[in-house]
Image 1: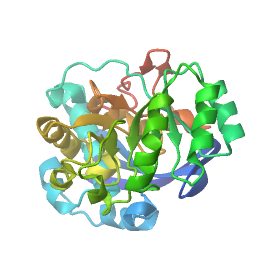
Image 2: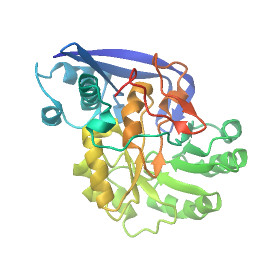
Image 3: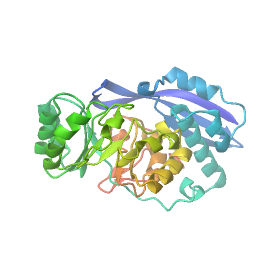
Image 4: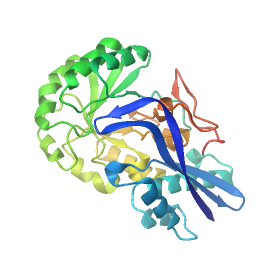
Length: 321
């Protein structure tokens, strides 16, 4: 078995800004695994928020033994970007070798298109209103907030897209008091959900707090081991493959979360269609889907995912799975 990892860069269609900073390109790692004349592909986005760099993740992947499988990989690498790219490449390799799609190998139902959120970058209220108006035809918009000036931005987005469903991501930028103060206004403006209002480690502040607008854990949840501490604080969890360390753990996390009563959101980092492809399978039937990474890019893989009025479609065999 040969494992190859390369760094790729995809230009963004426009500057993408969240409360932690801005970027103009998506830097990803692509993993290719060859065995018995077949090849599988996977992609990950090393994330500085979790202490990852392109170099550190590459080193983890290159440090793997000569032979391993998906089961042993779960022990060889911890949850995170490195395991994600390798795990997804192994799923693709299994599918190519068996001549069957991943959804069949995983015992899932045949996938279909999914309505996905489209993310509006953090900007001035005027710029965000213009962006919202430009995308007002989209059924679901996601807003990046988490600053002292969030309400003018939210009001502006609602004015720009009066009919769209809105979810927002505070990116750990609020306190429990801020959420409680904003909640009536969020209801008034039709906000359907708030992601990660408090910093990870401070979300005990959500215990006993009324949640008129549902809250979704993002940075506070990675894999099944992080699920139990979320009870009584959140209504949904955001599953991202780069956090769980691949589709294998993500499928198990979804089952465990649903059994524990959590709603499911499936999200992504800013990456190419190769990164989104396995997440489309995971996201079937999820309450919220946020797989808009390729929509934010100026360039993509040679055989990209198809996005249209029905949403994001399952990947072609040429892309993945």
